Amino acid sequence: MLMINQWRLFIFCVLICTLFLYLSLLLLNHNDGSYSDAPPSRWIGLSHSQISDISMNLKRDKEIGWSPKYPFLRQEGLQAIRNLPDALIIGVKKGGTRALLEFLRLHPDVRAAGSEVHFFDRHYSKGIHWYRQQMPPTLEGQITMEKSPSYFVSRDVPQRVYHMNPAIKLLLVVRDPVTRAISDYAQVVSKNITLPKFEDLAFRNGSMFGLVDTSWIPIRIGVYVRHLERWLHYFPLRQFHFVSGERLIVDPAAEITQVQDFLGLKRIISEKHFYFNATKGFPCLKKSEGHSSPHCLGKTKGRSHPPIDPGVTERLREFYRPFNARFYQITGIHFGWP
Ligand SMILES: Nc1ncnc2c1ncn2[C@@H]1O[C@H](COP(=O)(O)OS(=O)(=O)O)[C@@H](OP(=O)(O)O)[C@H]1O
Image (cartoon, rainbow, N blue to C red):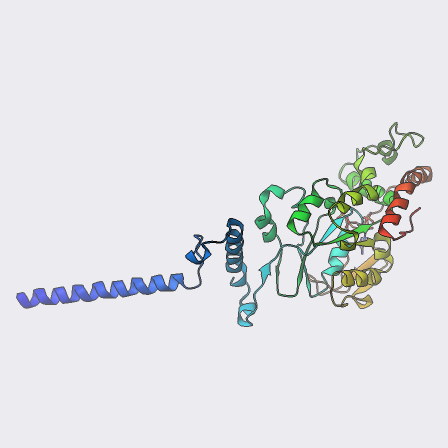
């Protein structure tokens, strides 16, 4: 009887030891490579913002660098991480911003958010960590970009961008403000066919003999110099690169070469990446990040514009003339609009 009890005690002890060993191994394995949200003791003495930055980097690495989505990077010892943008396409709406972004994405060292992020104008309250999460993962040496055309004309945006990165590079695609306004109108009327005629909105009393209605947003956006002056309170001119929307259509390779130089990128995108699609009436890509075959921008890019009385366009050209002249003076570039 005594022998049986001793055996039971022995087996019980063995089981307890095995369980203890198993739990210890589990704990050790769990700690390996995982990040705790509580600051470790070696962070004592660092400021709150330093700690939160380190903490954010660790979380970021955990989320992306070692994600099973990128096993090939891990094998090669490379880590893809999400960075805040190095460059922004800030506008102008209907200037050709999508074309510029899609063309730039041909470059192996450019990674860009696919859709417009609108952090600085619509989602600022979501915070910088949210913004970073909207960016694609990049490898060392690649630059991060996004385009949101309303940034150029939004009052608070220059200051907010400056707070994020005072050295950021800013790209602005500009186009004849009269054609731009008509393009803007064409977009709205395509969704609302009951919209009044262009001239009814562009002039105060609906007649081209009346005053130009500068409170109508499609007109206001085209006063480029006013918006640029606001940006120049925060950024020096050398941090801007101006792209001609007209030349981007006629000679995309030449415009993109200048953009590559401005961004400090190797000149990789060239004529051989483009072809002119006669049906679309625009340059298209032989291949791109998402397509291995030739493709053009979507049908919302390159819409046909409604016919506008030449007297109306002439009146608007007169209205924009002094603003354009000042814009040329400041940028040092004559874009060819009157
Ligand atoms: N390659 C190519 N293909 C198609 N369209 C091109 C291209 N290059 C420039 N464009 C011009 O881009 C205009 C649209 O500008 P955005 O992309 O800035 O528009 S948006 O603000 O994002 O809605 C669009 O304006 P609309 O012609 O009025 O539709 C085009 O003229």
